[in-house]
Amino acid sequence: MVQLNTREDLLQTIQGLRAEIDRVVAEAGEVRAVQPGSFEDLSLKDVIAHLTGWRIVTAARLEGGLRHEQPIFPWPDTYDEEHDTDGINRWFYEQ
Image 1: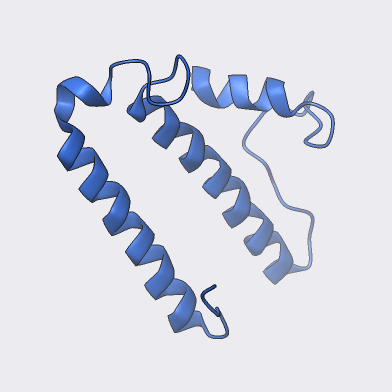
Image 2: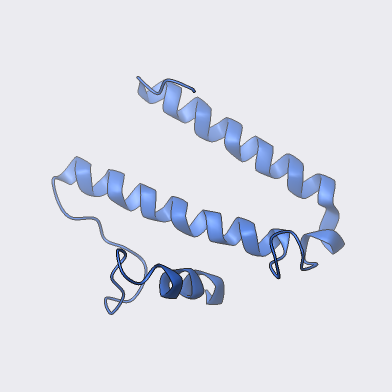
């Protein structure tokens, strides 16, 4: 497991993950990226959008922590992350 003890470690890890996603997308090509089946009925594009949504949530948590405030999540206030994960995932998909 990678140790993220410094800001530079975190940035390098994020950049490496992004490079890996870019590589997978390029390898898949435009046609395969939108075909269902990468994960059940979802396409590779759908899965990447889903993961990106949850990365935004992680960023919101980090930013909230830096400000000593509760994170501001992108989904409507009617969703509770602890109890509405399926609804939030659906919301990400629709966005």
